[in-house]
Length: 136
Image 1: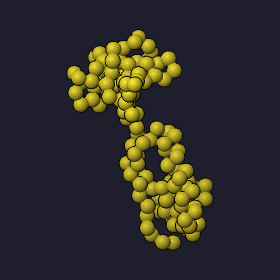
Image 2: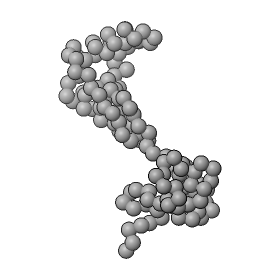
Image 3: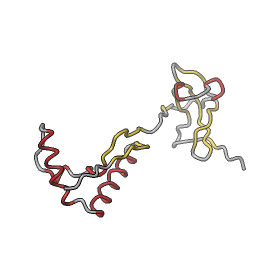
């Protein structure tokens, strides 16, 4: 069996791919439409490899995952424990530092996992994670 298969979301088979995201627009397939290529997606092992001729369906634009370039998972989901901190960075940093008394392995793992899961659910793929190593 051929491993290529048309990618279809419900009745939608036509997609728009920005030409800027394609290394060789002349070989990728589809038909030019403004600054995109329009066509039915061919996906192999979860990767969009090319477009075939459009089928006339309602096209949706395909873009890469969002990227979180700077994410402090160690600080995620602590806002409810900090109390009022609005508008004052020094006060917020002080409250965050005081909250570190709660930061044991289970607390950090639970909050970081929740942050990662929420990012994935909202379309964020790669994340540059950072954790501060200061002690309370």
